[in-house]
Image (cartoon, rainbow, N blue to C red; front, side, top):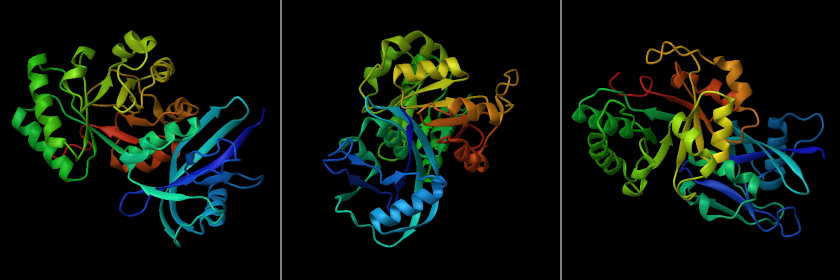
Length: 314
């Protein structure tokens, strides 16, 4: 069965809302909501197909777009490759040129809509930012909280509270403050024993590679409404992350780092190979900063993660 290559778009307007279209009942996966787009024709690039499809379906002309995620999915009757781009600027007012209903929704509302199974990784990618801040080690509590407050004010929307040198009670107390500080502004990802999960219902959880190896065969430790991530360093760990059903991963180290000088870096080429076919949002970590975001997108990554690169006082 030949895999159908589809160009799809996460169309985001200035207020952050995303455009969804409803599939006709007679279509494959009919009656479900989708991200607009269509089949890439012979001789077309993905960008060409995207421009053509959005002009035909919605009556808009794309003026700014970039790669977001690629998803391979096998239905019983069809195999698809969804080549998804984020459209940040366009001209014209979108309308259902083929009679399809349209709706603008906030990213946090996306899980409330019924999508084809192949669209689930796109829903996650559309809700995640391009940068993932990991907090530095060995800061005093006051300095750490001030830094997080400044980062959130500067637009950081995803934060991992990493404090490996703290005692458990210290970390738990700090986590309470950080989750409260970020409420409604940024998503906090905590680290620690899974026994703590029930104590922090508003937080997501970022698993270590060791936890991934230990728990992957048991599946997700909590429902899909809560963010679950994992630290990965090779193909085996990425496979475990998929098995466990995590929402996104960090892949490291991409390049040499000060924090882990002994680790062998993957390099951009190997990272691209590991991302290809993964069907998960991936943050590249290790020796990268905001200036590498564009290159990460071109490789198929969600963006970049870092400590020094995004911490306001370093």
